[in-house]
Amino acid sequence: MIISGINLTKYYGKRKVLDNVSIGCAAGEICGLLGANGAGKTTLFKILFGLITPDSGQVVLPKHSIKPIGGIIEKPALYEYLNAQDNIHLFASIQGLHLTKQEINANLIKVGLPINRTDKVENFSMGMKQRLGIAIALLNNPTCLVLDEPFTGLDPLGVSSLRKLIADLAEKEQLAIILSSHIIEELSKLCHTLYVLKEGKLVNAGPAQQLIAENTEVYNICADNIKQAECLKNYQVEFKGNCAMVTIAAAEVPHLIHLLDKEQIFITSCTPELSMEKLFETNRSCNIY
Image 1: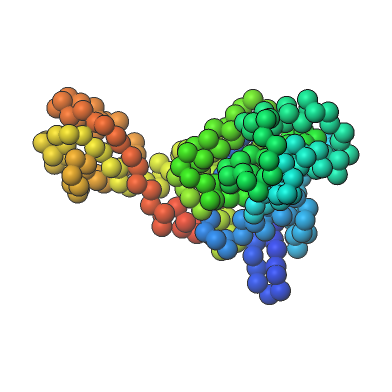
Image 2: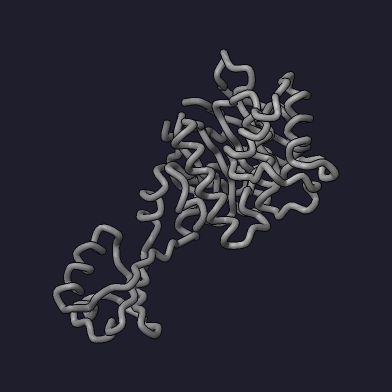
């Protein structure tokens, strides 16, 4: 593991905001932290950064690294009256780096930002601000990147673009990336491993797609002639237009698709309908590393 938080517990007064939480992320891996607002995600990240001290437990980071961890907590902290290049120059100086113009531009290019914009950052879209925040977080080559709710405030195109950037950084730079969200759809598209927090407790953890499959009881299967399917009579089904909401175990879905194909029911989409209630049940063993 590049980064590990082991048995972390934190109180604010008498309120326990983290309860014996363990989390880890390896090089090239994207780990998602899922939880509602107030579940403890930001507190956990602040502990990983060393901004607050846990009441018990420990954080393990690479020992021989100038900057083992970089990231954004809550929102990018930028000097909005400066342009992107000046922001990178200033934050680099704070971190003891003296970058040339070419090196600054290379940092912008790495996160997909233009090098020819000289206007103030206050004019940037939220997606561009997130990218600039990531460029600053990557100064001094950390081995771990932490992103707190990075998709908040982005339009669908911005979400898709940022998702690709995060995936590329994990694969090409071999960063260990931990990101939080309360939106399961985004984490499911991006993450290798998923951790689920509820009221400060880690209630579920494991490979993301495996967790989704284990906690999916209904699949939304769409086809132009789906209502004609004879094989669906063996299942609990609710039809909605050209789609069928089928109650079925994940392991049985390939067989059902095969039966539909034999009946010349050509599927246009098959989408799992995750049971959030089941995913957030507090009855699981969550030590996966």
